[in-house]
Image (cartoon, rainbow, N blue to C red; front, side, top):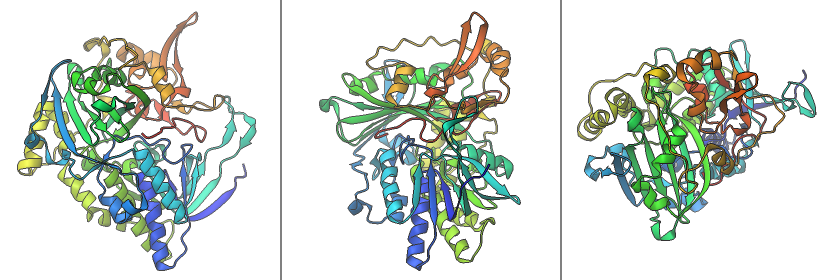
Length: 546
């Protein structure tokens, strides 16, 4: 097949905080040096920000490094944090509020901002375009160009391919985007990042990455209940009932809105757990209900989170490029924040690529990046918090909290804890686990999956190949169903996977139209039989203000 070829100095895959920061910074450096550096950024969403989902309370440290006058430039950081509360939910009705002095220091949010990260990325995209970056939303990077064991760029997805693989009248082949250096900033569990880590053995000697599934809603609430700038975090019920771990958040943003969500660690062992249903029933707890009752849900979404931290961080360089941000796993889970560290990884990437391009280098490995990132405050922060996740997994919510309080507030404990069991290996047989009877949604505080997908503005072109690939189509019914009661029916927060009975017996049905691109199936499937690949460009959710 003949494809159009476009050549650049730098191609960036992904329009999130790390990719956009890298794009802006390298163009700034080029401008300062009076040098022309061509930069192209491709984004699978219909627009920059369409697929961005995060809490989000952010630190402005990296943003200030990139744009010191961001306030005057109109960056959408409009809600400074004014109050911090942390709760432990002891039952469906009761809770304990944690004294401020007992909260681990990384969770303090003084000086931070509540934002829509999607809107922050939209703003960063505008700055990138103003600096001369070519941005192509709706163009997913579908495959790698690898020649002579070096990455030379990416191929964007073909458009107009029918479900049976035939070419429709609207068929248009993807383009080859070739570059001297290619940066992968796809976010958590990026499908090309996953491929690169495996091909170049970037995770050698590292703990397996650990993940959570974050589910979030945006609400309009009664103005009388709104407290702009208030931040709530907490843990315990309902996850504690199934022996699972994770935590909730509720942030009072501007315009009488709140965002509410639950992060469920994907290390849970009970295959009956449904993170979606845990979130829906959690909203009935008085700590959250007091704000949501009488309000209206505006939007819904879900996204996996790479929360393993420093112990799981792969080597971030390979011949021809870098993998940065949450694609690598730079999130600081002790802070429940990853935007500032992701952005910093992008800034360092831009600076080291710029030096390489100035030296007339191309498609080699920028080994200097490793030392530069390890000399940054982002690395120092990740090192300081390296034990947070392993402590929670090893010692549980209470024991882990005690360990982390000592480690973060009193003195650094001079050990490095490890968690070497991958999340998908944690499931126990369904017969050995307690079944969970989730309450039916009331349509006021709690909702069903299909209605949630609808308010997430999720859409894919109907007649296209399924982007959720089964390595072995028999495994869901022959292995996962008898042993684990096919957990895909429950860990997916969008109703994509079903075991359906008809006159021909049972079949495993994939409703790929519903997919919110959270990547949970790619992570949690116990047989590692599901691979998420890019659908046709522009497909998936379209998140407003998320």
